[in-house]
Amino acid sequence: MLESTFKRRFKLDIVARFPDVEIFEPNATHKRSSPDMVLLDVMGWAALEFKRSDDASQQPNQERRIKKLKRKGYAAIVSPENAEEVLDELETLFSS
Image (cartoon, rainbow, N blue to C red; front, side, top):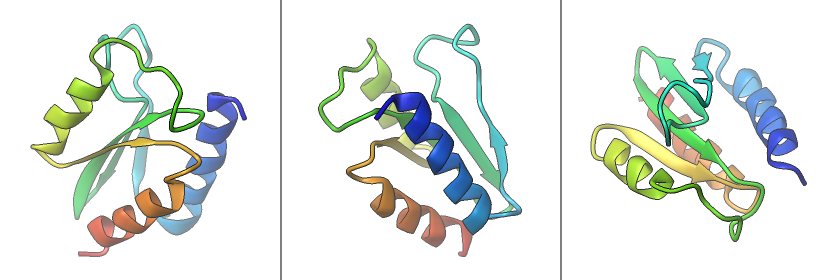
């Protein structure tokens, strides 16, 4: 599955589960290694980086950037293999 297809499907899941969450998708020219998607809610925020699979290659600094964001809030690299786990963690975050 293409990363863009997976991202589009995951976004539909987010909209269905969390209708009040604001979704922002920074464009690639904004800042190198910016997350693909930022979710904002009164209960918290999340930064997500999408990969087509667990073993897909990463751009330089992506993992480092996600680790840095994790220290400030919720951040994850999302793939089809861990999508349900991430959605469950978002459920916990946004329902606190």
